[in-house]
Image 1 (cartoon, rainbow, N blue to C red):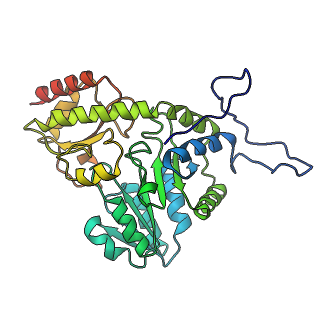
Image 2 (cartoon, helix red, strand yellow):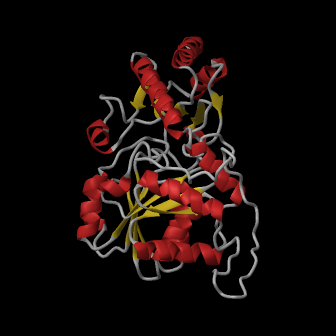
Image 3 (tube, rainbow, N blue to C red):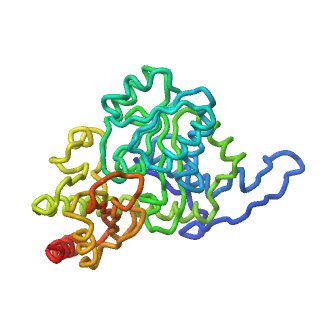
Length: 359
């Protein structure tokens, strides 16, 4: 699981610079293909090579994670076909499913993937699951899901945004498509909106590229360059984030006011047995319950290092008050924390102080 940079030119620059050209000289002798920035550019192609190496397939980059999901759903599903989606997938993915329903696609939403998938996948064209789920950190057995989906003649897509390619490789577990929002862990600096899909089937690769070509969802050269720059520190960031999440989980597990603690790398987690078989790392996200919203807000205000903010996967530790999200029904006081890259002892000391101050 590695990627390599292009061979440097003799005495050339150590780091690549983004090429911002969108128009290209036309070759009147018809030796070279005609190019245009919306069709493809060097920055996107270089990034696709890196992401494809990490995921273990052929990557197609898009200008957001939702553009990547839209490309998969809109290009593969036709009126009259069946789309199966986990009810715990990202809520905007489910909003796209609602739009597809209005266009004649039959939608089956699973409230319990483990017990419902075998029946729901009958006659389906595509299944989309997320594991670990965002924000509740549920785990699905992706290898078993892939077996059921393929036995029914359908395709399995997995949203891998919570894990990133360094936390989990769904293609190796049997998935046909893996979708990642690179604004999160891969980008890692809260300064990029970008996504990608990785596949191994050349026909699916061509379908997605044609969709992107026609619908104009290729990322800019600059965003492609920023993302490839970020991949250089991806392993170090994921290692530190996972270590911080492990340390916080063990701290929180001993607190009486903390309940419903979830982190895939924790042996007491309900999904640990499956996660330990299919995940490479526990990752930087965890979730738990505090005794009410006022208690949670006292905790967050007392912390010096946790930033109440949307998104996850960045250098700073961030937290979401999940009960304020209208589409998720959880008790007040439920929180998702995205561990950053702070020194582990600094973060645990800060969280311990904030927990005590919130009592």
